[in-house]
Length: 328
Ligand SMILES: Cc1cc2nc3c(=O)[nH]c(=O)nc-3n(C[C@H](O)[C@H](O)[C@H](O)COP(=O)(O)O)c2cc1C
Image 1 (cartoon, helix red, strand yellow):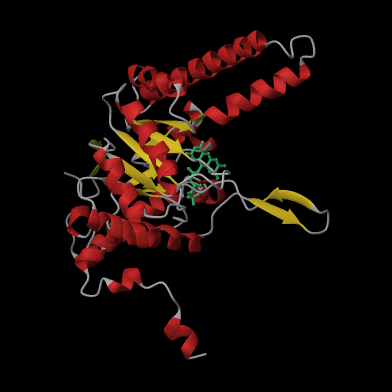
Image 2 (tube, rainbow, N blue to C red; image 1 turned 120 degrees about the horizontal axis):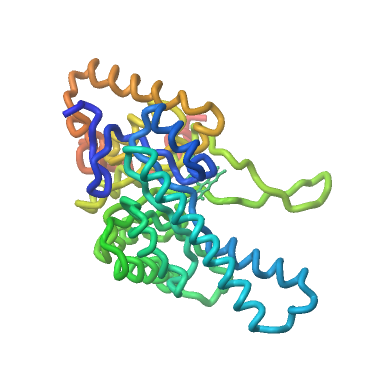
């Protein structure tokens, strides 16, 4: 066994570096390039529920002849849906033919409705696993937090009832009880979780008085968003693989997440900003680190600094800068 080998969602990976879902995993050429660079697995660009709904609305608003006819909306929606799904199935099939690493399909969902029914088609097309990219923004102030959490569980259960391949749930940091959320996802069939997705966030341009988009890419300091939760969830919930995501830009960030208990590290922004060569650099960096500490396999150090494995777990719980500010 090669010393960097690992498993993720029950799949065999030659190393713990995974290309996160993004435009960089949306074509076979890019996926082949990532495999050549040494990536352990790839998550395909998500197929988006919101995008199809948005395209239908925009097509109908341009189509004055048919606007106002509910049948027209259903027809266009059905056409767009089928076309988008067909293209995605083709991508899965050709990616599977072109590379030898695991290919994980990604589905963006905001509801457990019929939208998830094509998950089975993705399995049949050869996807090794599914990643559900779920994000729901509560805009109703009367909605109870438990209802929001339940939506994630409902989507997962619906998909799990249709596929036999492993399913991971990718969610954002904004949950009231992340440990509880992870436990519930596992209890409802998730093989893994991706912590965390990084979403589009609005910004304000004070010169033009317009709403704009904030920075698309993460920065290395964003690793702090997930490190605490990787360390805590990996200790609290057993048999649930954690893919760390957000702010992993260099080998030290990968090592930190593995030491906190992550199974794999997902890369996105650094691939956009620095190119695929970051992958071989990281792999060499992990090997050098293992040599230095005489670790023979990743499991020799995975989780070594997780919540349950450190003498003072309070270090993960501390939330205030008390000491820092009392000295300033
Ligand atoms: C341009 C771009 C496109 C993305 N597209 C998707 C997507 O289709 N599905 C998804 O689940 N995440 C998507 N993401 C989120 C990334 O997969 C990743 O979770 C996030 O960027 C945090 O990782 P990073 O700090 O390494 O960028 C995208 C991110 C970027 C920057």
